[in-house]
Length: 550
Image (cartoon, rainbow, N blue to C red; front, side, top):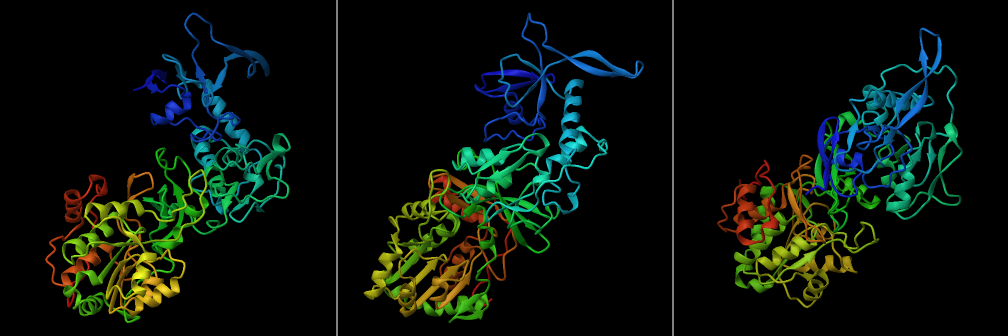
């Protein structure tokens, strides 16, 4: 419930306690042009692009300012008056406050003047600028200026292509001194490594002496830059944004599950960058560098074809080989080890856990995933898996208990506890992966469903190529227990299929009657057998994995 409303250009706009005018307008879908303001940062009000006209309180005269105005008839400047304008990023809302923006001629003139001032010394290098196509200077010039440059003097030249650190390159000539990058370092990363030096049109951003821009959120300084001053060394000169498409996804870098956009080029089916997607309940407006740079995993190191005995094979041949490998499994279900994955979606884990508990007769499962890593107090989680909570919840709901670690499986294999292993996932979180690989290779049958090549695929007798998170719609539960959906972004690489489809195809090859034919069927089964938060994703149009012998 709102705490009141303001009248913005004749429209009632509700606001919450503590809202500024620009924040209330932003929440209502009204665009007030701005450069320095960002909803996740403090408001310095230094760009002056968000100026608005605010009506006086009842019973008070408006605040007026004396100005000089050009009089064409007198051929001279004359004294005039205009209302004082206020930066909407610092003007607090009050119930009934009247605000004029687009309907005020004074505001339109101020926007035009600010835009012209910012472009006086700005280089006209849009054709080679990475920000071209998503630059606020370009957009606001069209909306609020549309006039040629009047300054005939040589513009001020500043340093170009300054390397701030491993990830960021700075072009001082393009910088408009909005200070967003400085505030990201101060307020988000708590590492005040950037600052401003000089004054006026000699301003530029600098790194603290003896330091580099190397904290965990350095790429956020580039993300918040409204112009092309800060560029990512990983994206610089790699692609043009108008060729890219964006889809909603969930970062796979850790258990925080940051909401993100994955930008890709449909012409080569390749991702080029991550961008944070606003979600104040999960990641706010930010992502860490580790997560931002994890997008190459969508295509690097992938298992793109099935393997039988380490050799390339078709999916049909792999299903037939897996059936032959598991012929003796019905004799003793206790000799089968089933491994879920903290990397894969709820859908993939649910399909495997369902087959394990209801058809194979397995009573307990194991959980594979990436090893723990660096953590911080902002977003980075020590658990580098996106869906450990989801996989554990799936196992519990299907009466499989709490999944055991791979270290426990390693010890069981060393004591000859299993003859067959059916695993999902690509990475292992054990101290001796080479020894685990050796033990897995010794069992009678190891069937692996993997997105990437690694310990599990190399130690398998039969390996199936699973779609990555970017190639299949899936649900992931983060460390806070929030279930989130990642949409399909890329076309599957090689012969990869969603993991749940491969599990169903394998179960059918073993003779089990599973009537799931679409994602909708899987969703319905998840709703019946587990908590509702495990589903909710839309039906995805994907090709069905082939049957054995098809």
